[in-house]
Image 1 (spheres, one colour):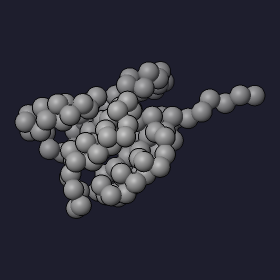
Image 2 (spheres, one colour):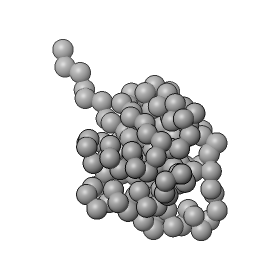
Image 3 (cartoon, one colour):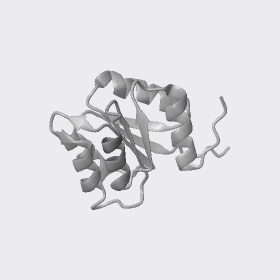
Length: 128
């Protein structure tokens, strides 16, 4: 019997609670997730592994999601990036889209929105 390889998602959020929630949502949707809570760890893990999507918060104790996205794009221009943030100002959303992000999700986290958005970007068919 052949099993499909799970798509891998790297979740980078400074909140342990958000990391656990996102991991639960995405694992339930059939994805393999890895979570980290800093720009430094996010960059290190992104460089060391192959991921199908990055899910990134915007504000960390050691930098910003904008900085992280720019650094990831220096070695990985193709993997989709989704931002999930509580900062819903229009100017922030415009800046996020300008740096080449595929989607902007808002907090508080909506589990269905997260799963559907990521499935759509990755071309997956989720059954709810």
